[in-house]
Length: 174
Length: 174
Image (cartoon, rainbow over all chains, first blue to last red; front, side, top):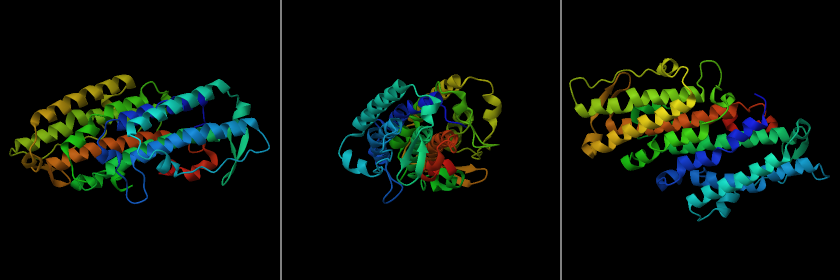
């Protein structure tokens, strides 16, 4: 389906609540679990989403809207959260994500974007020209991808514990 | 990791809140979206989880704990929700799921299961002998699988809208 700003925001505003419902107060056997070496735990995923709020979605949107000489995005650091959130309690990270997301959605709403603005382009360092509309759709899909990843990482911890039911649960071997 | 009753319950009790955070009040373009013909929308997934609360996890646990002559589970109807929840508002389904889950977890807690009881077996109609421990671990993984599915179904609606970013979002082609 086409990107729709109202429908997209409806998802974006729910993600902090979703992750809080899934993770707040959960034992660390779940929140620090991974899918193996070099893969992310729910804790790391929340840190990654925080970094995106600070450096990706809104700053890149601003760059596109400014239509200045420099429309090229700064490459995104996919590992920044491993430094930035180190040692912070997960509850604090969930609060920080919710606060930043609310601020960013207020900024987005304040722009009252037109179709013409949504069609403006920026330059992705690897993907080339991308529109503001594509960036905002990606923000939504990126959220949902990490919600799915969070659930998958947790589910996999019971891959063996589920016994023969493993055959019925594709999530355990995805 | 091994199944742990306390850690497992911590996930089970969160699932209704997670789905409510994701779906309550969301436009139907998301909650009725699917991955194509014969696949499930978030609305159908919630109905499926309700049916599981009524007929699967606790009834099967009771059958195992009874250790009667009849330890064979009734086959699970994976399509019951297509009849049972038809026409009900999603908000009602989310409430119903939360209520049934809370009742079932109260039942489970009341059993104060021992390791010996968790090792008792039932007979799955297709998988053969399974333990109560495996059934409960499957309950947890099944929840998480459907949370991941819910997010994935929604994400895929923006497969084209994300433009070239599709290459960076594996969820869109899973």
